[in-house]
Image 1: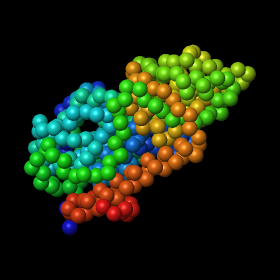
Image 2: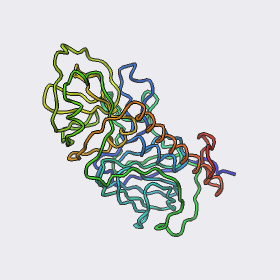
Image 3: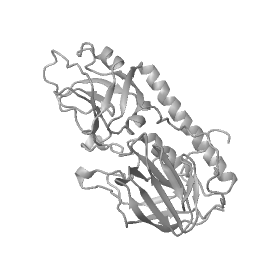
Length: 342
């Protein structure tokens, strides 16, 4: 029988360059003029939650650079995903992208992220935090920063009561986790046509053949890239309007902007391409100095790749559910039924 849910307290010792409560964002908020927000790397955030038996959209901690550490007086089940980093429990190195058992009086450190911008830390259970429009995701412009600071106490409601794992340096579980690669110094991003592609004569060939670099002016609203652009001719004034995440804007200056999850309107700039949904998590990890190229794909190819990404998450979800049930770990009280054999 699953253990009764209890509330435990975690003490944050180090808070990285920036650590925030995070989830997958606000549904329907953009109709009210509020960006959806949510984890920049939705894949890593979802996988972290799946690995500890939570719904994909549960609240986790998004960590950007530096060192993040916390201590707990009670046992925990956690997972850390995102950019490659050094993760330790009581000084012993543990693996990313898998469930990790933290013993009582444990200290967890996440440090030295490389190859990407963000890590995601999920806990089995529910992190207690305020919500704005149904989401824990930050919205600083609306006075909802959700920043986590050193010395802060986090509350976690969990039914996890501990699972003995005497050898922390050895993997406890082997699961079919879809782990993205951050090893390449040059990333390749799939894109599809935008409404002003034809008006920017030569933009197809330019984006397909040249290299672009993320600049330090990038932020949560969008990535700003240094590289050659073509300004559309004969369009006249473009009325500002809402756009999907991943839209490629060409502003008046010679740069390329890829809009992120906190974008608002186009500001009247032409949109010459869109990053595919399957490419968005990688873009969410791009840091200043990251080089990338672009590859045109069809709408059908974009849909197929997104479906495959979701299929892999569904398989992982089912395997975790079956595994946790087999070893009697509290799991998936809110998740979907199994869809594949363990």
